[in-house]
Picture: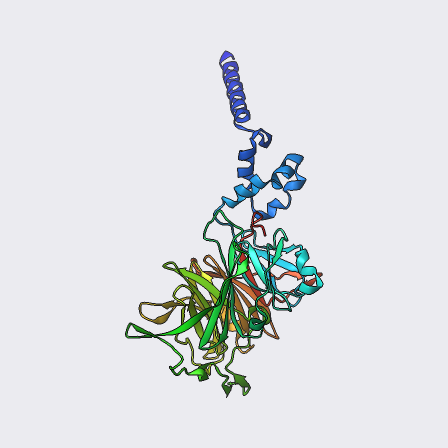
Amino acid sequence: MEQENCSAFMMTRKRKSQEENCISSTFLMDELNEDLLEGVLSRLPISAFFRLSSVCKRWKSVANSSSFKLACSQIPSRDPWFFMVDSHLNRSIVFDSAEKNWKKLNHPPLLQRNSNCNSMPVSASGGFICFRNSYGNFVVCNPVTGSCNEQPPLDPALQSLTFHAIVMSSCPNKHDQSSYRLVVVFGELPKLSFRVYNSSSGCWEEEITLCKKFNDDDNSKELDDSTDFDSNDDSAVYFLSKAGNVVATNMQRSPSKQYSSVITNKDGEEIVHFLSSSGSIVACNLTSKCFIEYPRLLPVFYEYSIDLVECGGRMLVVLLSEFFESASLRVWCYDEDVRSWQQIAAMPPAMSHEWYGKNVDINCVGAGDQILICLSSAEISSCVMCDLAANEWVELPKCYVDGEAIRFMSAFSFQPRIEASL
């Protein structure tokens, strides 16, 4: 009996000791000093930031403080959000890649003004998205906070020229989330030029002319005014498709991807890649002030849909084509050493076959190792996420607004950054 009581006493002491240790190991968030609290809250998912102000007065004060935004800027990267584009331009819908769900954001007030109504998104980088209004002017905004800034207009003479690329690049300083550059490439091939807007100076830099460079047995030569240039490659050619339809070889881009382009940095040189009207890929080296054309993936008279993305610092090509009574969607990378295209990923045939014979247009955007592909036609619409590292292809759930599924045309990737200000 005494042994049982002793055992019971020891168990009670042990249980109390465990409870005491548990109590002593817990702490309250209120006990954290301001710096630690800001550090903890800055690592929360961005979607949680919208709820910080409603938790308590202290958290509301933290959420509005400049030191908290500084703590957020110390986070090197965040899971990307994808800003979706559909026929209704005056709304903001994003796909959260971390939580795998859709979110509707408040459309920035500046974009709701009459002068900026129905502005088209044209590029994105860091925490910003660049829109172009009906007057040809650019508006940069943070879709998370709604802050906006209208850029100084370009020269009126430039507005009438053909724009080939509009691309943004973020400041290389990871702690400065508010600086960016906006690059526009314009002109008629082979006479191309570009201008750069630098947010640090708040103005457009001088126009710079690009020279065409040829590579022949590792000896490069530049194109001058006395050199003939075959412009027929960029002209429309008409042919009969297998279905008996008359098809033009010039690219028919959706308005939101009219200036489809990406920017990469290789060995300290900035290179802007864009699709010409005939579907060829042009690479403009902003550092050496020259451009080249890559060899075609498919002959000009083939029917296909193509787009460019940037993933992990590389320019990749996503191509949807039809062969042997089936559709094929593949991702390609250009190998500079062997000067040829190399396939790095392919959608499973069981998925891609669904698009056969439906005249599907693809518009794509890259973020890290992910590619979001918007496939649309008169018959069907879908969004597919490709994970290049795992070679996984997943169709995203439909997004419904007022009970109706939205047909997205394209998307732009950005990092949700509450500290990125304009």
